[in-house]
Length: 244
Ligand code: SAH
Picture (cartoon, rainbow, N blue to C red):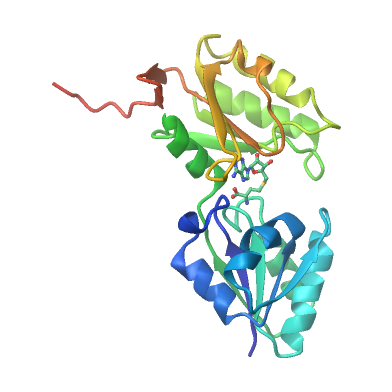
């Protein structure tokens, strides 16, 4: 029986890809994924058949993976970061379940953007944190804001994915306003763009200043909890250890 591996590639450099993810790609006859991710890995697997596809074609990509698997091929369907966090794992399982196909789906995890970004900033997600996507392509906007509000009220460190795109440039402003109802305006904020990629850049700032920095779809924004502080250029959320 053919296998579809739904592979998390990590944030974008080979060192941060797991050996298991590499093995899944090596075992696959065909590798399917969004153009940008295919371009990140193509050079490391020169013998493979790659099928790149455009953005928002997730269902099509899964249908194609299913078709190839039914033809007897092993498929690697790739996502950036972790395939199970805003990645392709859920939709692939749903497509296979819906068609009652006799195909094995194996989810191969990866380092998610929040982990990669946190390591650049220091240790900001050492305590309870919430990951929230500000994309309302598939989630109603009022539910997104409600989750931001609840996470802020619960004093979670908040990691914002998909923080800003051309069509929704003000959601991040609204999110900042909501968080400010529950948190001090000098709370540390880390902004990491292209974490673990060649053009990585990052800034450590505060909630009140964060909107002055470039934030886009290649960025993760990490907003500290009420105990997060910055020292020696590193953002730290303490767990409460006593250090003499
Ligand atoms: N499955 C991915 C997330 C996909 S959602 C993961 O687990 O990381 C896409 C969002 O993830 C982007 O808009 C951005 O907010 C974030 N992201 C993904 N890779 C990133 C990187 N290398 N640096 C910064 N943010 C990244």
